[in-house]
Length: 445
Image 1 (cartoon, rainbow, N blue to C red):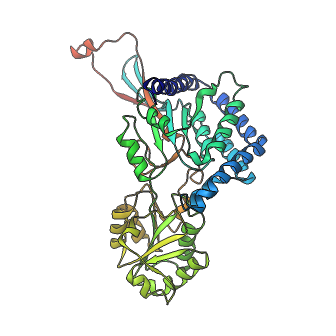
Image 2 (cartoon, helix red, strand yellow):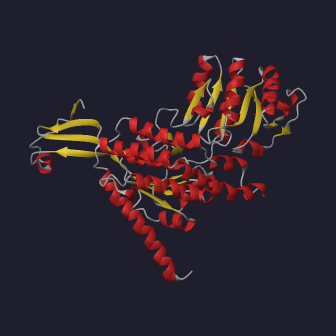
Image 3 (cartoon, one colour):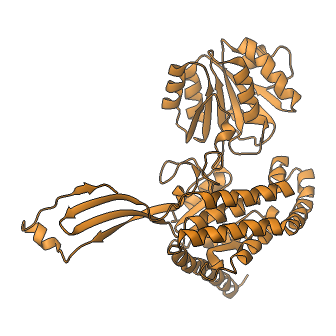
């Protein structure tokens, strides 16, 4: 590739992102009613073009099938790629859910009277332009587009190559749905296609306000190391369920099974099951049998093999505790108590979602206090860690970091705030000379 060609490509990416930035400035000033009207039109358009979406998705699935057969694409990823009529109906309903949420913009967080006639307001506002790089799941497109529009942000999307056709159709339908709304710029949603585009995007720190990489830990780390743009990392989901000695056996079986089997490809699926040594002899034979009946490969520590009741188990290695399977595979470890469980989770977990099954309030409280994760549950499946299930309408991703936003990131995670100061000609000199003094009186907002 010549230098001239490369410069042209860079220019094209920059030009597209700059159009998105101009769109973001317009979106920030739109009324809530107008943003909601556009969202509802987009939801209707998704349903109206269901056949077109399915046809594009079928092309992607047909192209991906040989890679699955060759072992180059996991069946879990292929499962995330495929959509159905029901899936499209869910996409549309999620968009409507977002439209029904309260307006995240222009909320007054605080009002402070600095002095007579000098009042400071702290109000929510959009981030601006958000870049999201993701793989496989086509439903990510309407989820993120709806959250961005509702929160007054423009969004730059880059999906995986395996979903090229589906993503292109979804973005095209979304942009066409905005056509009857001349005050809603179509460039509020733009789609990029190549890895080279991503490399260009990561350099545009003056144009893009936040990058959300949705993929492996290695990919999130790559983005963080190669960009000056703030990164909201959604990496691996190495999630645990700890079954304490005081657990209700039926709850433990149901929670662990749902956490692993309900949708094993999700980042909030269970990967390692920790079991208290006192309940293991009763619990593990039943749990392992239930897993194996569902086609789950079970890997266990030496004590797990001892309590398995002769059922076939693969011996677990050190690498299994660090592994996000995203498939029907689970590792099981028997522990001496809650402290060992906490220590194991904090060492090997990805700070995503962790569950304890116990009837002891004190033990649950200790687990929740000392486990370092975005979500910590008692007697509930790890699969509840989700923006829609949390009532956020949808999610941009799940952040396992601690700054700006944590856990499922919805509308609030796409907003920041600004200070608005209203005065009557006051100057700092009069305060520095002692002629005037600050009141700093808080006023109910």
